[in-house]
Amino acid sequence: MISVAQNFGKSLIDLFYLVGGVYLLFQKSLSETLKRPFYFKLIIDQIYHIGIRSTWLVLATAMSTGMVMTLQYGYGLEKFGGKLYIPKLVALSIVKEMGPVFTSLMLAARVGAGIASEIGSMKVTQQIDAIRALGTSPIKKIVIPRILATLICLPLLTVLADTVGILGGLLVGVTELQMDSAFYVQKVFDSLTIQDYAIGLGKTVVFALVISTVACYFGMKANSGTRGVGIATTQSVMTSSIIIVVSDFFLTKLFWLVTQWVS
Amino acid sequence: MGVIEVKNFHKSFGSKHIHRGVEFSVKQGECLGLIGGSGAGKSVILRSLIGLEKPDKGNIFIDDVDITYMNEDQLIDIRKKVAYVFQGGALFDSMSVYENLAYPLREHTRLSEVEISQKIYAILEEFGLEGNEKIYPSNLSGGMQKRLGLARAIIINPKFVLYDEPTAGLDPYNTRRIQDMILRLKSKGVTSILVTHDMPSAFAVCDRIAMLKNGHIAAQGTRSELDSSRGGIIHNFINGEEP
Image (cartoon, each protein chain N blue to C red):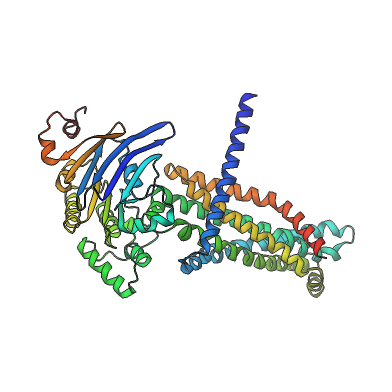
């Protein structure tokens, strides 16, 4: 009983350290973002690594999600004559939930792991110390470009994922469920509003901050050589993924309340 | 009064009290050798001199300026004049040799790319690294990495250089080359501190040697003073005897 309580207490302290550490890193990054010098080239480099190089992974995931969802809805709703609702269901699910969440999870795995391991390796080989010793800021050189690039790329990749996911649904709707393509497209356009896109993209802004800041935090905290880098990478992916999945519920609720308040 | 002054330096890691009131100073143009057993905390002192570590108690003065509690922004000016040569080089492995050398020049000078290029090719030649500018650090030998680390540290002409075991793991030829480079910088008036276990190098380049033991400077002196102090703590350390 005592050891259970001790473990719980330790986990709680670790959680406070994590929240405090990530918050402080984010705060420091925010305060340094508007200070000179600005490293635009580093941001462009990161946009290439984080955004462009993730495109195929995101596209494959989105296409598969759209196709599978349509197939499942189709098989399920066909029995009740509800095939008409498939385009609306698929489009709304993708734009408001699946697109943002799956794209973010893919980026948490690919980009989060990449950032944490790269920064972790730099930390254990004293390259972060060298950046400081040479009179420059690791926050400006390492952290801010990654946060900004993720903030730019994740919403754009999500728009791409939404589009490809809906197209995947259309493909399966037409070939497997014998639906009319014009009808499918028309229903999608009728169902989706700007508000739906705003909800999905609003979530990705939060998820982008989570993925990049958490990955930078664990990378910066890495120690104990290569083993420490591996631990930092795993912790980064796990933490980001859990925060994305858990916060999705609260964000959905929050955006719902906001839309109610606006309308 | 020295241009580098360490006063009543205390530092602990967890329950381990490493430094218990370290005090020393280095005069303008002097090279101080800092020796001591493994884990004595030599590198921690060196790192503290450019603010990479903060002492728990005590003060560090560089050029009469107390840097002890400076923040990262305030330390930038200090770090422009105090160069740190890392033991493992700490070279940026995602950048070529050229880019590593260009880094401090682009950050802290207003030189044009042409001038930067001229400066880099000159220092590559001076350090025997010519023809390697496009190579990445991981493809260089250990000796070349050390020389590149030293070249990067001094390319913006610092007033002070802190060497953390610059000859560790090098063959005699490369050790000699590093010694020559340190002496060349010394002849230009650069003040330096050399942390090392390599006693021939310490004797070759240092004006004075201080030994860190039990958390403080246990002994210090010039080469001739050490030679005459048979049975002394540094003498015993050098000869591998229980100090």
